[in-house]
Each structure stands twice: as structure tokens, then as C-alpha cells.
Image 1 (cartoon, rainbow, N blue to C red):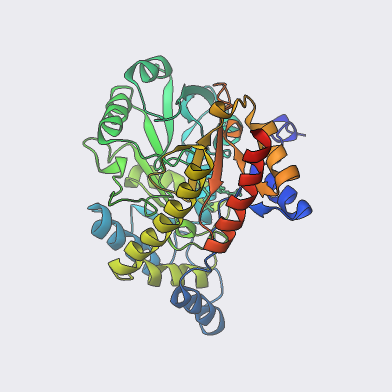
Image 2: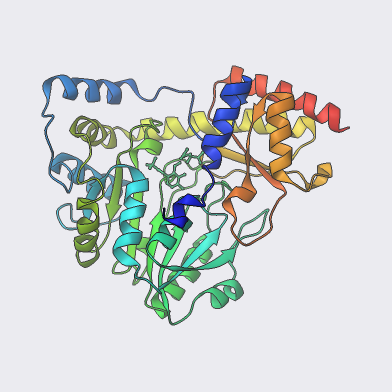
Length: 384
Ligand code: PMP
Ligand code: GLN
């Protein structure tokens, strides 16, 4: 068997969700909202399944959706994308990531990765034969530094895997950080694979800035999005890839033998959804920000050291102040003894030994958050 997969542990999300199911714990681990998602979008998917076309759609995505993606990114991010040569639909961001990595990275190429990193990245880079070069981001700010980039980039750098807003840290890279990374990509003639699935889930008036929009990046950036996050429908697995025609042409080749296409009713529903009024997107953000504020206030009152959350469904705590040195052991105790599942952030590091950060998902009903906080109070009492 291929050791890249044979030696991999089961993903931390599945492990924690299984433990939560077995023990009846409140699951604040894996990132998915309690909210069922917009009813009109789900109704459109149901309608299309009953009355629409259910055979293979075009491998690049249905034209309505490709047009809707281009229009949506023009409206929200000021990008001018050509729907027929620069936009492709995939089965989730996961397929887009796999296709981009396999389509770009050749054996022996170096790939710069920023840890903490989403857990799919590294196995996919290894599968392509890429050589990972890590930049370790440190809590609580998880900022890029020029020194770290200078160490990680080399003449062999082919690609950079970047995630902004960043899961699991819930931080957003500053304009200076983006400019610095873009400068390194240009200087080393590297392609940035930019995972922007959290682009709409940003709080406190922030607006997402795609790295593809920066000077000189149009020719060397692959922008990846996901309807799962935009519409709080994480099971839908409808992703988007935007890239210059010479890059997209190749990514279409890897896509054609990964999944080839994506369920047409979901594509039609997402096309409809992307055209919704600004008020839907603003409202979605406000609801999540309200949940964040409720949960953070509770954590703070209990005495947890909270790392501010700027976007995503997540907020992290630093457990060092509690005298804890092992996030995995802490999360295990939390779920087994106190009935709350969380995610140990060390699972997102390959090299850096950061073991003092724990991630919670706050995209839940008030009653779920309050019940989670009550159980966390028990954990704090025990620690005291
Ligand atoms: N990238 C990141 C950073 C994610 O957080 C997720 C899922 N939460 C994905 C990719 C996968 O997205 P999808 O479900 O569309 O495959
Ligand atoms: N992206 C989700 C999270 O960070 C989980 C995705 C998954 O379970 N594979 O929690």
C-alpha cells in the first residue's frame, strides 16, 4: 500500500466527531454550523433535482454557475474574471486543492506551506512528489515574517499553499503580509494556490482581499472557493477554481480524472445563491459574529485565554496559562471527562511544536454554546 496514506492517521475531525458521538459530548470540534443554511438555496437544489437536468453536466461546470462565480467575485472582490477561460467548478474545495497540487507540482519541486495548515495539504503535496518547506506561524498573531519567507523560498520553489482567512487560527492576513508573499512569489516565479474558502465568513466589517488581485499575481495565482462555507452547507461540496487561462487549462486536465463533474442540481442552486442580495451575506456574517461574541464572552468569564477570532467558524484558546502543555491530552480529557469535543491545533502542524492552542467551533445554536460553556466551567473548576 502507498505509505503516504497507509501511514496517515485518520483526520482529527473524524476522530473528534466519532468520540463526540460515542460519548454524547457537545461537538464544538469539526467545523459545521447548526443552522440548516438558506431555505431558498436548498429549495432550488430540490427543485432542480426533480425538474432539472440530472445527467453529466459540462466538466468545467454549468455555464450559469461559472457566470455567477465571475459576477460574484466582480461584485465582492473587484476581480475581472472571464467565466469561460478562468473559472471552473469542482466537487468541493478539497477536489480543487488536489487538482491544483497534482496539476502544478512535479516530483522534486519545493512547495512552501504555512503551518498551522489544513490537514489535506501535506499528504497531497507528498502524493505529487513535492518537497514541503514549512513556514511556522506562531500564536497569537500568526503573522508572516520576511525572515521566515526568505528561509522557505529557494530557486526550486514551484508553488505556495496559502490559506486566507486561516483555518484553524481564525486570523486574516494583513495587506502587508499579502504584499510580502506576493513579492516572494514573483521573485521566485512561484504559483500561489490560495485556499479562500472562508472569504465570506469575516467579521467586524472586514472585506476579503484575494491575492490574485495583487499586482503581477493574476498570472501566478489559483484562487479556490467553496459554496459549502458561503452558504453554511458544508456537505454540499461545490468548489470553484479561478486562474489565468494557461493555468486553468492544465487544472481542467487533472479535474477531468479526479471527479470530472459535480451534481448539476447543486451547481444550479449555488448559481442562484451567489446572486443573492448583499443582505444575505451581511446577515450571515452578523449571525456568526453574534455567536462568536456570545461564546467568547462565556470563555472569557470562565478565565480562558482567548485568541481573537477575525473570521471562520472558529475561536482558539491558549491553554498555556492553565499550566497545560499538551493540547491533545487536554482535548481528550475535555471530551471524555467533561463532554465537550474541541480540536487540538497541533494536528495542523508538521514541524513547529505548537501544543498550547485549542480550537472551538462557535457556529452553533445559543443553547448548544451555552451548554458547552457550562461543561467547560466544570473543566475549569477541576483545573482550579
Ligand atoms: N480548505 C479549508 C481551509 C477548509 O477549512 C475546508 C473545509 N472546512 C476545505 C478546504 C474543504 O472545503 P470543501 O468542503 O469545499 O471541500
Ligand atoms: N474544515 C472542517 C474543519 O476545519 C472540517 C472538514 C472535514 O471534516 N474534513 O473543521
